Image (cartoon, rainbow, N blue to C red; front, side):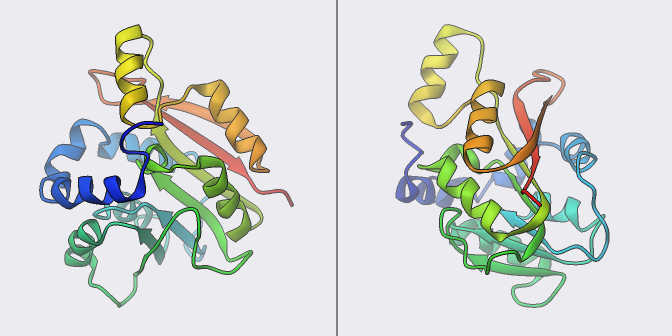
Length: 207
């Protein structure tokens, strides 16, 4: 387990990263990648959508180009403070919640879509969180998760393993199917300097 696959350490990490997150993020997860990921979903304006690990609201902004309202959750109060500055703290179109991906504060069968980008790598128990995603999804609902693709280089692999969760297509298949999802598909994306840096998985909850 990597050093940041720990909730307390991840919160501390984002306490400081939140100050520069919006300046650093485009080098790793940019608008083109976000648009490419959004195209993988069947979105309609009136859908109920949850953004898990919303951070400063970068993905939330993209989702709001397609839907009317977003429920957004993050465990970092510092990241949420940045998001509040963009959208406001309590009023629609964003409904903010501070919480844990492994214990979502929502009822079963609530959402049409659960989205999570740049969060799975910090989860101590990804399958537990994915099972929570399936629980809160309506039957047949879609999940989309963007995470870091496992590097090919041996030294990069050792470094990646020491920091956080990186995984390949086979491991993603195993995680999502073990969590109970169907129709699991993957896409690779990234900025021009590393077009396969991210692995995006889309799947459906059973009908």
